Image 1 (cartoon, rainbow, N blue to C red):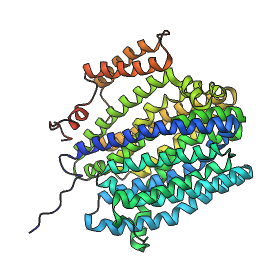
Image 2 (cartoon, rainbow, N blue to C red):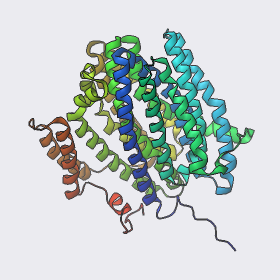
Image 3 (tube, rainbow, N blue to C red):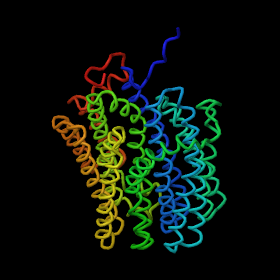
Image 4 (cartoon, helix red, strand yellow):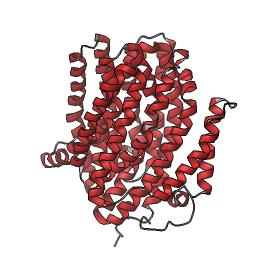
Length: 489
């Protein structure tokens, strides 16, 4: 009699796979950051401040639709697949694909309607349609790739992430060389989406290509569980985009362009916590069902890793923000460096609330996320309305940080009611503070070039952190032959 296949999500090595998978995705994202910086530099230099602001506004609008109808539903599907037997998953994937065909066109249509009602120019309305079509194609590919996340085969997903960025860079470079105006750049998303579709049989096998299904019982189950979850995650993703949409309505083109440049630089960094929770969600879901102690242990450990990553990014960007914006957009974008230096402070809060949101999703408490995100979204709109008119791009950046801090506090409040304390410990925070203080000593040295000071500050932070025990044991063990200790093992 053949033995039952091992469930990787409940195996003792699951944590190791999650950490290594996260490393693969973040490494690919780091490569994507490099490609994205080159892409952004080409765009901003070619389009200029005002046109770049318009480009980022449209991309942000479409990203809101993607957050609900693609990213949100993919994470919801990942949770649902983690709870199913292997034999039942193929049928579910076909219905998930059918769900995308139903939901994504509606989401894209809504953002196009918003562009019309907001009296955007015909170029921006057409750009919204083109970018939305690209997002639709990418959503179909994403639905077919969801099983790789559940099976913790994250190296293959990392490859898809990197190639998509590379295709985007090549297309933008060709358009810049051809002297293209604004509108054709929105069509780049269609090409990168088609590249993702072409990669599906390569990374997931030919059997991953399938026809959509619309089984009514399965679709009812998916919509009942996935739509609230997608709405919750969508509201969270709107945070990253809402301020520039508001600025396009209440501020001038130059300040919107500065904030758009800062936002463009932040995009790849914001993806890091999203990638972390996408990798960890299947494990958290299995733990929420079978072992609450393991769930608390995992959430606390992910929180520690998130704080380290967030503080590291803040330290590095604090000194490098202005020269980065000059490299990306030219001297005209130097004022955007001040906005970026403020906005990057939100990363610590984003890291934490994404992880805590993942825990609530694993518990099936997506309605709690809708409640908290809706409250904090109102707060963010209020912060933007108060700070953008007098302070422009810097006011928008400050509003983003305040909104993310409010959201993190609200989400932890609801999570604590369900799981008990999962906050990182005070002793851990003291080690992070000690390491950060040592790095700040490097940042204030004026004799060093900005990039050298930023890199040295990051190195000092990690080195001091290593010696004071800041890095979680699970991270060190994941890349060694030792087995982890504690409830997460």
